[in-house]
Image (cartoon, rainbow, N blue to C red):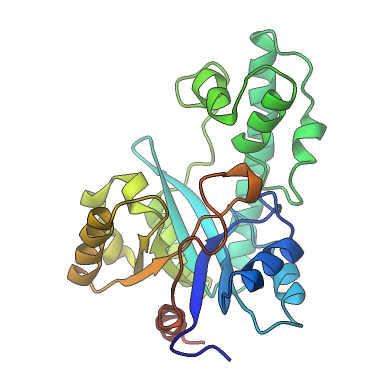
Length: 277
């Protein structure tokens, strides 16, 4: 049973989206790092939640249902985390089906554009095999580009082909952050703005709060204490829960790992109270 001295990592990806770790591997690492609670927040899918909860059953590890929803505002990617979402919510399922279908079509179109650049040995099937769900994205395509020697790193893949304004870029599903926040509320979840220091759209936070935002991911890896303090002050100003996590993607994101950033278990209790579970 978690105690006041327990810790949680509330931002973890599995191979059900663009992480490389299986649910079993995620649980193993979380236990090894002494965590009492984790949340699986895969991109635009909840498929990894139940397998992780099942893998954690024989350990004293709590797995909170979560998701990281993609959205966009005036050309800027804005991600909304949701905690304690209902996995059986019909509206959430319908929206995720739409988003994932768009993701698959996007991969098809990016592969077509890569062929126009002379890269003609990448298939849709091999990209999709890198994810255990339909939440396939640019990181999967970037990995194949690197694997086949077209680029030397994932970063180069984005800078040369897949990033915005690059030859093979295709826009993702069009959803505003306000719609994502509303969807979190309808699915019983608590909406939290992911990594605001990356999003860099602080001027929108007041309107997000009006739309139903309940938390801010204040604690995030590889940022200075000054940056953390800055977002702590914003969270206090708008009475937002201060969440945090590693944003671990396994081997796909070498700069972080499960448990690199953790928050007191009291944060989980705050989120649970807001969700009413």
